[in-house]
Image 1 (cartoon, helix red, strand yellow):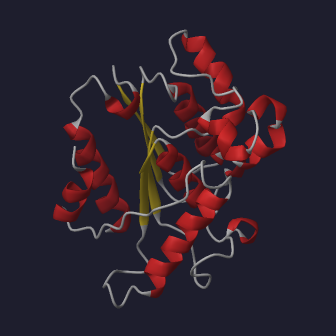
Image 2 (tube, one colour):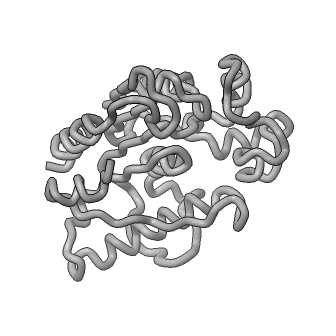
Length: 222
């Protein structure tokens, strides 16, 4: 889909954030890395040059999980971290979340309900368990702390949630739950369901999705 080239051609500066994976560190290190990167970009906005007042975050799967957390915890002192660039704001103006997990507590049950899911999120060696340092059912407080749905609030920035209805890794139910929670408190949120799409939107023609993403960015970044 070459989304980054498409975004750049549409006039948006693109920076790809690197963060530590679960084989390197546990949550919230990943979120701290992303927040530090945003503060770094904002600090050096004049040099790059970019507009420090208009930042969007985009991510898929684990990246979708993290950008949603960025949207919901901008300038949350307890989750800012103390690595890298520490001064400045980590808030973003809008977010595009492609099939990111939203609730680690319900994820395992939702996957079992599918009957054909990829992996069991509640096993000790699952990516979700490695992220928080234990199986979510046995560590509900850790699972809750790493779940975007925990941090939903009415002042969150606009979000575009895009999920496949045939996703066997992150069920559509994860996107629906997040959408309903955000909508309930008045957040400007859209849930776009990609019919027939598995994880990564496999199995369907998907290039139009980028068109919708660009339209969303133009609307909310100007």
